[in-house]
Image (cartoon, rainbow, N blue to C red; front, side, top):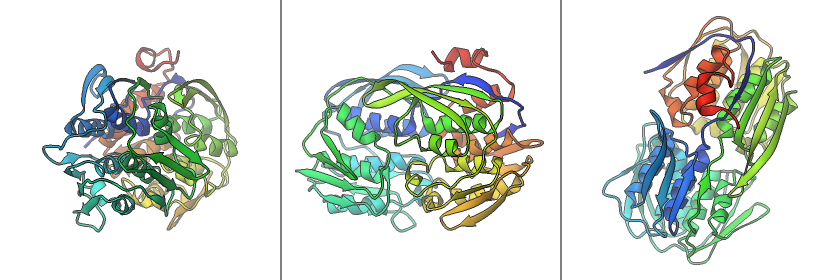
Length: 451
């Protein structure tokens, strides 16, 4: 079990790029694997979660060649040979590791195949709810058995079949559920529609359109048609704004800081964190430099100053689930109150993020009131170093590493191997920040500097 030790910093002036987007890397491994030919994918995220999805596609008959690697982690550029929509039966269970995205989206793909398969995961994933995808996929004609110790939990045994189209109204806003149904819809006979109660991440829709699969969005209705095979194309994965969020919060909350994050995804369904921080008084500007496969990519500049608390709006929550832990840290560092409600989904992530965030903030000296669906944080307290548990949750580990940059004394985060699930290279970036290095430093200049 590894740990990270952090001490406070007095300034943060840096220019960097973060690794490829996790959500998009999952999806491009699947859709390129379904495509009609060879696809070159660049800036793929070599995290444990995405590598598990890549391994799952290989188990289903997809082949790929590695073109470039991040040393010690895995491929960042690869050539994926699509199977024209025809996957093959795996020889054993498919291990999704810790990834809910991987398991739920793969279930959508497997629902329309002509074989039986089984999806397994680690202890954390095996405790997360899968009934939310079992229901719509079963309505489409797939047979899905949840074999876990808890009702509706993995392992999942999926017996695919000829699917029928549905118009499915989601009871909760979930990009993973929407994506699972849309991917299954490629194997259904007719028009499949998902009705979402609030706008969620739209990477699946954008990517399918980029691969010349017809997807139509009308308000909160998203539709696709069966019988389509994605057309092969090359794809550039933007930097992950959810990974950039840790440094953005650190710079925004530290007066005098200047941070530039380059080549990061600026998809409007992912930039809610910038809106929240600007409501808190942060000086943030962003600019789109290019668009690849419908995904806007550009730069973010942050200038630090004193922040004030805010309330996160109900319609922002679905697109902030990954960023809430570090936004809670921002709330503790700001003046006034930070209110986070309507976020009960956080209790069924890699860990109960509401309980863990509240506990760790209190251990550092913050005053936190916990609710069933969120928390209220009294900002302005002087944080002090503490010994904190990540509970194997990558976003908890990284959020409290950022908190440690503002705390008196030393902060120790335990069980930090989990950061590999989303942010390979985080430890090196943290080390650069702790030692006051900027883009001129060897590590940043060699591998992470902006153009």
